[in-house]
Image 1: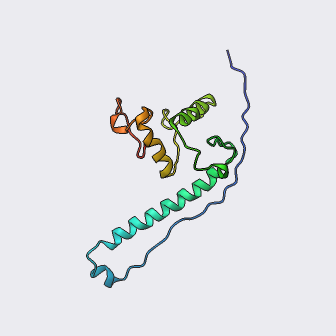
Image 2: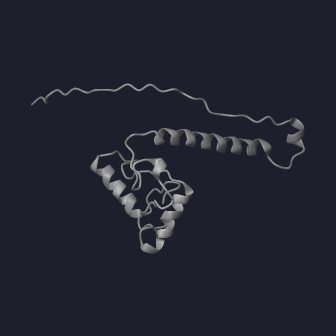
Image 3: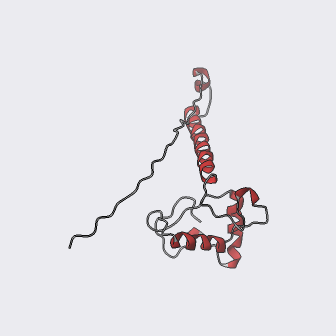
Length: 148
């Protein structure tokens, strides 16, 4: 039996591309008279700068989203020091995403980007049994860098 034909709608998106990058000028005298590998150190510093710049650009895009959940608040700028991300809040978020059939990464997990202070709030919950150090996982599948 031939299945019924279904249509598909596409929505176009317009984007503005930005070029990120930088360079460092190092004199030949400085290269020769310095005990450090300045070329290598310069590459590391420029790479870190570009990574931070791209992170800020990504954060700006995410912050402008209209389908966003905040901890007990309706807007990001309403969050205060008393609004603490907990393992329960993360579990609620995962349940919401699963209920919406949101795609996962590698078919297994969702990702969150968080400030180091938020990471700290999660880690100190270790005494409650909600935080498991990645080194203590029973199943040592592929561990993603930065995974908690």
